[in-house]
Image 1: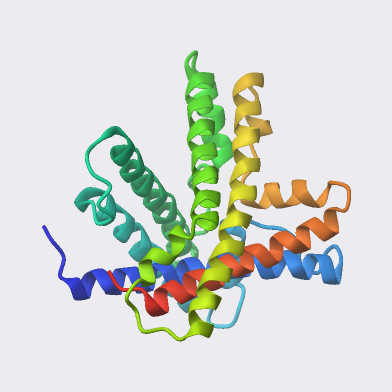
Image 2: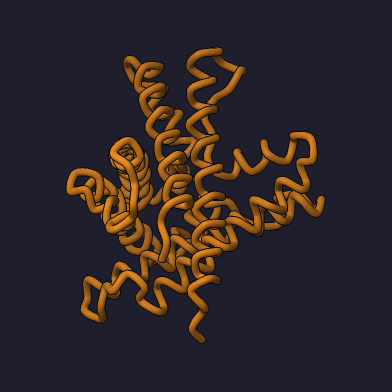
Length: 264
């Protein structure tokens, strides 16, 4: 069933706004951790940000709203994949990209369920975290091959983020829009910086997925929050973490700008 253009745009706007909230918070918390020191902020992934939202005044309402937004993003990505809204085609490359849209949508769908569970007071438990899922896969004889394949896909996603940044592919969504020079430049720069930051994070995630596959050890896996902690543990880690915090904050702002100006 085809959705009306109005409905598509509502899903797009709500979804990208919610995604912007999550990534902005990840970036801000990383920066607070650098500026304020240990215990004042710190690194965390999307789930940690969802949990933090719930600790604020009117937390349950905010959780419900962010859950709706993430569900909208999930729906939009699946609709994009099924209806081929990006005109990727039916060749191998096009199918691979459309599967990627569906996988991305599913990940945010799981995150939306997590937000709803917290909002309803049932807690975030009851589901498996990503390391548990990796452990279940590795418990099978074919597990390392599957985890290795996931690592390859994640590496591809990382490279695609960088490709979009350096080729200005991220600018295609605003072609034909009546933006002034300052707005256009803001869109371009936040996209370039944000996508490059995502390239780094996804690259680290793919590296540790490869390690988990090669060593048959699920504890090697690192998500977004653990990847930022890994960066922090390196030489000049505080500086690198600050740069990554700014980069992920830029990505969050880029999502807000897309939600504000892009139309499908």
